[in-house]
Image: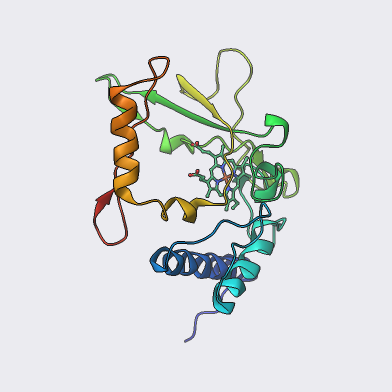
Length: 210
Ligand code: HEC
């Protein structure tokens, strides 16, 4: 028998589709020749193919969409729209007025190792819940009161400001050698005692790169 998706899981499945398209677009862009930055913040970069432009135009409304109970938000969440936090100075940007943020919570185990409190819904504090709209929802949002005792067994709290979410692909246009050379130059001549380092991570082809 064919399994029918409930409206909620169907909506969940559908919203993954544009994200998958956006990821495909990112990988495609990564392998194209160096790109030129857009002259307008939050807009597509110059010289996109029509397929890439379709990906941008498909992803943008998903980013700026307010998700509802039917489209699958919850049971706990931070905000129902990405652009609530990524909005300044334009959609996709940083925190409006530095007022919107995420809070991470965690603790250490008795042996000193890190515990992200996944059992408590960690490490991301999701302070809103659909309980407000669905009284039978058993899950309240996770809330940290301003002073102890905390309802969560957390000892580490880390408020984070949203960075801008656009322009990431442009970093891939900087040659790896230039990033490494800049880090080395800063380390041998730190300004005010501060120097950057190349954050080496594995790319999709398994190569460890800055
Ligand atoms: C409640 C505020 C909030 C909402 C809503 C939110 N974000 Fe973020 N976002 C953040 C914060 C804070 C960070 C930085 C996290 C960190 O530094 O650990 C972040 C980081 C990111 C990054 C990484 C940027 C980088 O430099 O690595 C991307 C991409 C991103 N968000 C996309 C999204 C998308 C897509 C959505 C919607 C599905 C979304 N965000 C919704 C607060 C938010």
